[in-house]
Every structure is written in structure tokens, then in C-alpha cells.
Length: 155
Image (cartoon, rainbow, N blue to C red; front, top):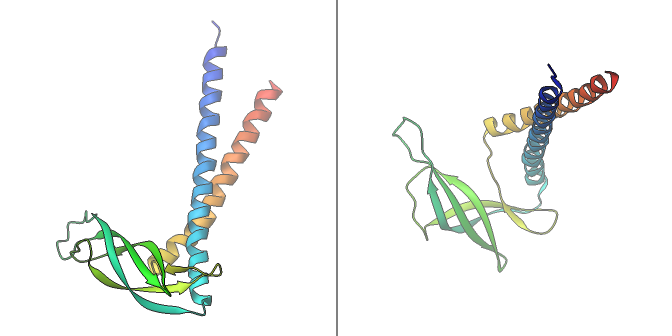
């Protein structure tokens, strides 16, 4: 009985799984790095101000059993020095399109103004965890792919 097609299928599936692991690791690195870089850019910005923003669209997100508050992901637009910018935020109260809200923005090194973003400690901790875990996923995925090819070539 010939097991070659079954081994080839197993080899292919393992390669696909390892590539997905590496891609997931890259995604984690990018997300965590982006969050940390935004926090650093905010802390180094020479121009932080509060502006009036307008809700352009929203999505109801609340999936908690706690009925004390609702969660909305909103898309907002705001004007700074005559230029209109767009951003995303989370609101914890009923909202409607056209609602005026106050947002904190900061000047980036490219000369644009961005929304401050999440400033809670949990988000920062999450970003700090994403980076090493993503790097670990990449290392494991690449090491397993290398090991798999070495074992296949030695047969």
C-alpha cells in the first residue's frame, strides 16, 4: 500500500498551517507596534487640542450582559486649522448621526491631526503583549517550516 499521496497532503497542510501562524504573528506585530507608536507619537506631540467632531456613522456593538451602558463604534469627522479629518472612536452612550462630540487630537510628525485613540491601561498592556507573542508565532512558524523541509529532504 502506497502512502505517498497521504504524506504529501499532510506535508501541504502542515506548510499551510505554519504559513497561517507566521501571518498571524506578523499581524500581531503590526497591530501592537502601531498601537505603541501612536501612543509614543501622542506623548511627543507639540500640539494636543480638543476639537468638536461630528458623528458621520455608527454601529451598535454592545454584547455584554450588563445593561448599564451601550457601546457604539463611530466614524467621526473634525476640522483643525481649516482641514477636515476623519477618524474612528468608541462611545458609551446613545448616539446619532450628526451628534457633536468633543475629541482630543494631536499633531503627528507628518503634519496631520489624529484622534488620540484608546488611552486605557488595558489597551496599552494588550499592545505590549501582542508584540512578543507575534514574534514568538513567527519564530515557531518559520522554525517548524525549516525543520519540516530538512526532515523531508533527509528521507
